[in-house]
Length: 354
Image 1 (spheres, rainbow, N blue to C red):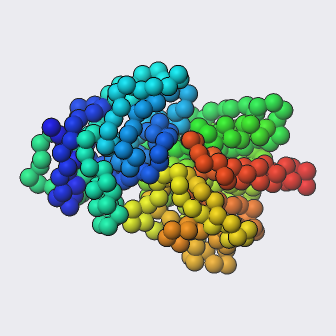
Image 2: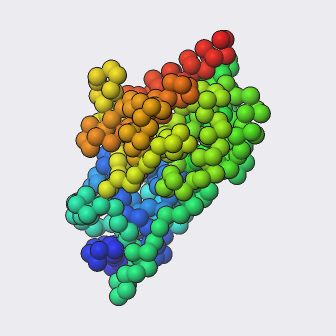
Image 3: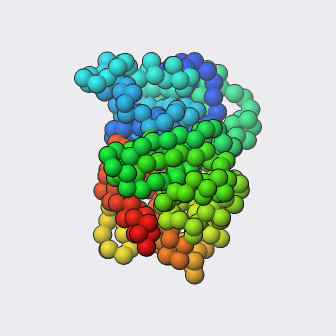
């Protein structure tokens, strides 16, 4: 048997899955009932040991066409792992994927108890191991660091529009999910993906019609270079930010961010649209939030989490910028808020013809 050892001293016994290696990470949970492939390939999980709350994982195997990026999570915890998947698109079982990507994990553990501890005590570190350490100091000292630099691509990529080109978008890759690009392409946008370390001058020299700020992992305040570039970019072109992009834009405009007790991860987060007075169900994956009050006089809060009241979106009319904490490009769903991409494209077209 192997173990999941929490930094508070709690130990869970389980059976090894995936790569046979010890690993320390930040323990989080996601509530998605499906979409485990998108979770495993979301770069925003860098440095984290992910617990799936749904009890059966792997039942439709591995479908590589559904991948959202590279696997960067540090561990994977499930109640039951299916080793006999049934889906006409499945290429191989999930455990084969975990082994090939070097991701250690456990199955047969009480995931409900793990989630209960996390919700009550907050996000904490944990270790997947074969022997329970007598000294927990290494587990407690772990921090997710250099997250964006670890997942952002090192070279530019170009993705042509589907059909006639309507707009040209510069996507800054802080750990971008592929469906952001696909969502823009199908709306007639050609997308140039820029590494996170690109300068504002380089990006503006390419003459984009708009700038897209992607999702990504880690503490937003750590990304001082990216924040400085956004100070130069915001206000020059229409800007749309998602997840980490939402947080970095707020910091660039003088706002603050805070770490949430256990974050929002899963496809069932209710979000209030403060202008329309309706609620959307959204997909989310983040551990930090923007403090809306810190941006008074600069922007206004547009969306709010219906569960805990945290900020889920900001509008900056004077800077021609809007951002959201949730994922309107959500794969595997829900897609209730995908219309935000239409809004972004309309705004770019308005500015082109102004």
